[in-house]
Length: 150
Image (cartoon, rainbow, N blue to C red):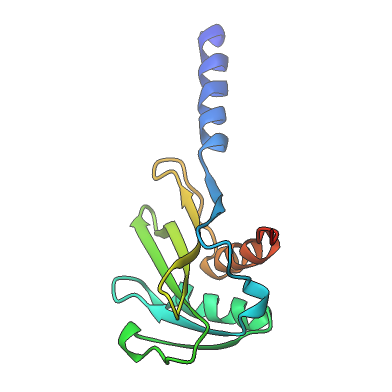
């Protein structure tokens, strides 16, 4: 019995720890835009999402030195440099947990997507991440991995 139990336990532990969560590297679509030159951001509240991650995104952008306002897309000011779409999806287990989080930076003048960064985790093997901390990590990683100007 012990010969069967140990391998099965090791496989289950490997699956558990390998499938927890990950932040996917940013995909940059608009390389001509330098985030460091953009100082005014608008965080869009997605009606299908909670405001927790959107509020955390506004805080994280403020910590990066930006002037940030937020609200619905139809209230977006014309003079903002870029806007941020925050889409968080939640699942139920023993308690609600953050299943995925996508953050899109979009150029306000051209509506071109500047970058997309996502957090996702396995719905079967998952953790219960803090939404504020996860949002801060994503915003920080966007600014830390900005592509070099050619």
